[in-house]
Picture 1 (tube, rainbow, N blue to C red):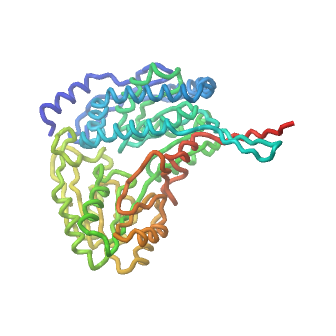
Picture 2: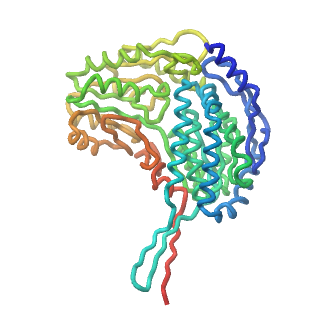
Picture 3: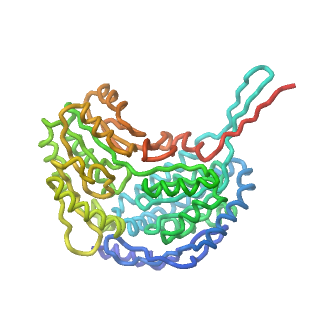
Length: 482
């Protein structure tokens, strides 16, 4: 339960007004939706929700703002973005507290989200959008420019909402696009606070932030005046987003689900690997697309690894995110909580639970960190993405067998190899079917390194110069010198 200090923070946030940003004006919603503290199941406050008329107003204003915004010098656009980042930094405490209350994660993790967003945004603004000049012959010059696309729709999930909002906002606006942000219905407050910080900074219509009750996404994604969609979320919803964009061939980048595996080799340091894999498997209470979700260990090390890994889970401290001793918070929403409860029952049928497994009665969407061994590999816990704190460990007899089993999934977001022999690990990494393969780590992202999925884990990339240029279209100017 929240401490007295935490209760004061909650009371202060409940006194705030949260509004949408439409055409440069802070605007109430057509309706409202309750925002729930997942640690207590109490209503924090009611957030504004846009109807189709307000959504259309935002789209119209973004289109009207685009011609002027795109012609503004890139240095001026960057200057405004840096001013926004400075405002965010000045409100760091409030943003982190809001993230904790609506997402459930510990306050330290919420601060990390804000700090990561700030670092990311500032590094992206240093990237170059200068055109490339090719002198084909003495009489022919070709220039490759990077033209903005128009109105971008950013659809944000609930697990890292502020960071994910910023890593879409900064490149979209920096490239000369205008932007509509649609946060997740269960975690809108951080984006609505961003609306307050930004409303008087950019020209009207350049940035719009809308509330959603869960039904606004299809209307926005199929609208003909949206020119690009940047979506982060589940594979199932990503398919609908892709279909919605087909009517006018929108540019689409999809960062979707993952069923990442960790492959422990027989020469790995078991204690180091067990602790590191534990950290990346259960980060954010297992609610991350690139969490490690399947763990493969040599048969001869299987029992020892399971014991080491389970011990970390057994020591984990769950609680309200505002409490200092909390290491892991609740699941973010009731729907996910009910899904994970069903998977816990499945785990009891399909394998042997060696940590967690039993939910304690009481308020909050808390699920103990659960470790399963000796599991049937046809179990949904293995074949499907488990978006919660349940992780399975499987033995393997040969590397070829392990690689085949790891690749036997429709997902291909990330994998990791754990070994003291880097050349051997690199050779195996080349055989794993995913957008990223880490060696002796996992989840290591950087603003200058492209990130995207293979197979049904996504389309296109984010981050790096490749991700930045995905907010543009190449425009070639071919010059013949008379």
